[in-house]
Image 1 (cartoon, rainbow, N blue to C red):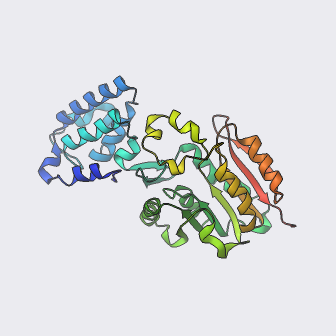
Image 2 (cartoon, rainbow, N blue to C red):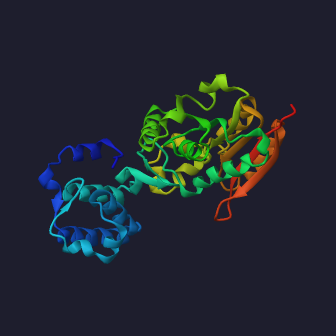
Image 3 (cartoon, one colour):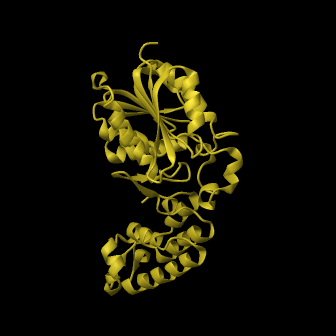
Length: 319
């Protein structure tokens, strides 16, 4: 289990083996109280069990049936008092549950996260599936191998997803935040993908000059929220997730413009350009791709909610 901030680390340092044991009845009562507090502030009650699965090793069935209540002794990752303090951070400070437990599920992975990285969203998982489909467009190019870039890697989610499906590719993961890169590298190491993912600190393509004209594809979930919209986001996002990964400038398209302009120099002929974007940005993104002049077969793909969420294009191969 990972932790999101120094306060949590300080709490953990107070542990002793004896203090991390609790009766099933005591934990059941704690769960009841926590669920009530969640309802009062509008936090999903399911997050209580998410926390308990992490700290008490309880499975979904025993939580649903409340069978753990009968156990004489349960081992926790840390004392019940610390558990209570962490839950208070969730309901009063609106600290995202993913940061409270330090991990989040994404595709087939369990990823370490902290406030240094954006929490990977379920809709972003579809970027990996789109990358797979895009490589089938021209099988003779064998785009599934070679060099791929994940720009603004954050927790490393996209890079890990690409490494899993493209077993013959080398993934280049870039982020300007050293703290984010440390988490991404930890995730790659834990999941066994470190040998095939290379990490770089820098802004977008700046560390990848040697790869100009060589990338089979680039995939990115860049900042795309207009600056004046940040204050209106949910408190979990506004107050805790890194604004560096959210703020897309005045119209939300500052980073996307950069990626449209510079990717043409790095993609090989027929290479794939694939990003996530915000609802309402599709028409402008398509226009920008056409205006740049280096892309063809430009497509907009909706997410499961029907929102235009992804933009896909190919590097023209006859420039």
